[in-house]
Length: 460
Image (cartoon, rainbow, N blue to C red):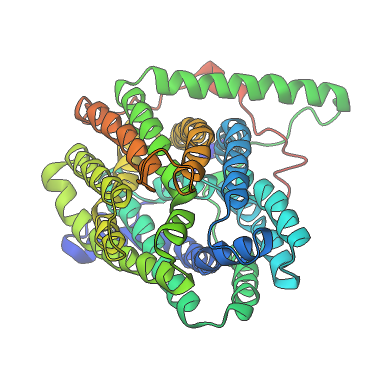
């Protein structure tokens, strides 16, 4: 595997030079934005669709909360293996085929709901969406960040990552605007049309940045190939673990990511159902809250972060964002009136910066050849957290929004989740992200990692 590095606009100064550095990402960011718009426009309506199908005539639906928790746990279990695997394959087979795979899987579950929203089809949606999440959730970001690291020089990567996450927020705003004003019966049809456009665009226009190693051992038997694949997968995953374990910055950010994801994924999995039960929110209120967060996030990630991060560094941004996430969780948990969730959502403008600052710290501590492995491994650590959180959040939320709650605090589970963000903040304060990356020296283990599954996965 060889990463094709591009020198994009070096020597240019000022803001124009910065934009020239980001120009190679345009062909990546455009289809990603469309994909995120298509996904986000379904979020606010899914609560109503699943509640209506599984618990007709009720405002609360414990069954939907438990199914979401089970889905998140199953996804987390498989993502522990799949995310690092996709990160390694992105290093070996190329970014483009992995993006095509991960983006395409989202089409099928929404197609089911576009056809029918009965109880049986909702169950089928959950089953297929679980498979889709295993392949695409988190991996799209990992591969995109690795692609950005290929084409952007080190000093500009933090700005590039902020653009990726900023456009993610912008896409969420547009998706929620569409969800707010489109009739519910058209939402899934429009979403599917947009989702189909994304892999088509990438196939036609996105340029690959990884040069594949020439094929070897073409005459090997099928059994021998399988054995070799399994051995090399083990070797690659062990190397990815070694890369993270050998770097204090990567070890520290792994712990930060674990506890942050443990709390935030738990909140995300139950939040909309909690708001529906506590304040009777519907699609319109969900869309308004999500739009408010998204609009502020665009400014903070695309404008503020690139200007501030050279002055204060990634660590300060990360700590401020984690502190904001704690306030976000506590306000939601103790919300005493329907307007309080809107106040809580405003903290999303700051806590959204956890992601780009995390990506920047990981990228700084990794060599160009190890970007996919490091990002994928830490995303795998996050997936462990995402599988653990619903084990507590789903039953706790269902209990406290029911009439049998021991005391009146419907958001008690969200308050508990904020403790995880406090722990993440403590670890973030101990980080030393200024560590210099390891040099790109030849490694015998890396030489063993010729592109794997090239006959199956890497053919185009």
